[in-house]
Length: 514
Image 1 (tube, one colour):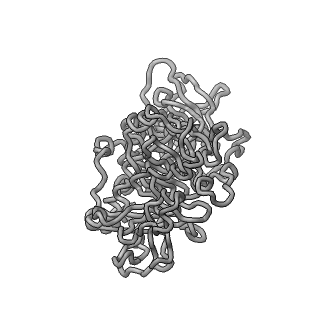
Image 2 (image 1 turned 180 degrees about the horizontal axis):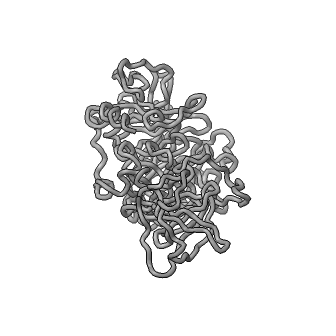
Image 3 (image 1 turned 135 degrees about the vertical axis):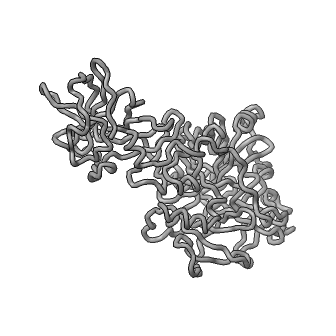
């Protein structure tokens, strides 16, 4: 049992309530008190873990004290002993790692005389484990008493390895796992499949810098042609936006302001700098043998409207045809009538240099799972596919392996990430947006079942930090976190280790300890 260190005179405390219970922490151990920020759930953690928050550039785990003390969850604004609850986050430090303690309400700060401080053993309270207490503030003179929590054992019991071990010293900037031999062959083209007016188009992955949501604010350009939608800010640089619907003269354009969840911006590298292409969705990343990409038929190739196409990919035995666009020639479309990128909307060389040189970044394929975003290095992802209609069960496989399917004649094991990460099963299934992310390292290959594709995101090196260690299983799978903030963008992306995901036997043994 811990004992509070007494000093002559008064000692300052932060007083707060949890479930109507009066509690306290020494003021000198509390770094900050703030309103709870948006939390990102992280899997494979203890039941008391509310999620992760980002504060002053650091990622910190947030513990719910109601959960630690075995109290029922409370709704925001719920009355507790006649007082309206106003949740607050107390930030303390444990083994060099900031940790947030979520409480119902902060009562205030109080200077307490030494004669009002008692050892925890002299004030037994069966509702709290005595090992979690450092003492008690005695009631008297019209003032309420409070139990003084000892944050060290409280946090230790939730996170045995937090702030210890290799998490703080590992080389998280290491290069992504090498691609498999099949991924390195030069007879395949990796394509990003986009949808425009319910039609499929594609662009080479090498030409796509990243894929981001349509921003809340787009600045229109006066007297611009219809396909020049305006300008947006991408990490402090201007980016011209071009609508493919308007550029190609397809059906009436969607109002992305009414449903921004469907709009995506594919950021392309061009000879004139960076440009953003607005599409409805990014569906898949495919590896297509070059022999299945045919040149544009000569009769069509003679027409100026088709000069922005590099070829047509034949999939599913020719039943699915996807035009392959050229990022360099795309904006020449309609150049004869002045419809090119051109004009004031073109990014200057100086602006392009700001974006490309100032950002040293890693590219990740980002997908959604149970309300959170996860990322894998682009180099480890072979392709992203629609979920198969049928899966063949695999006898004696770990419970997180849904079965196997075939991909171009090869057997591909399918890993249900929700099961692997101990997340609740999705009601009604993943639906049409469900995808299979195919990863490879060496000769190993697997398909990860995810809820939806979020796009390709480049995360600056300075925005990537080690993930807090909430469990050994989590640390093996999620070692880094990418945080993007600014210009209306606030995202926290959990970055997974592809090599660990491919080690099925080790995963099964590791999860047995969770």
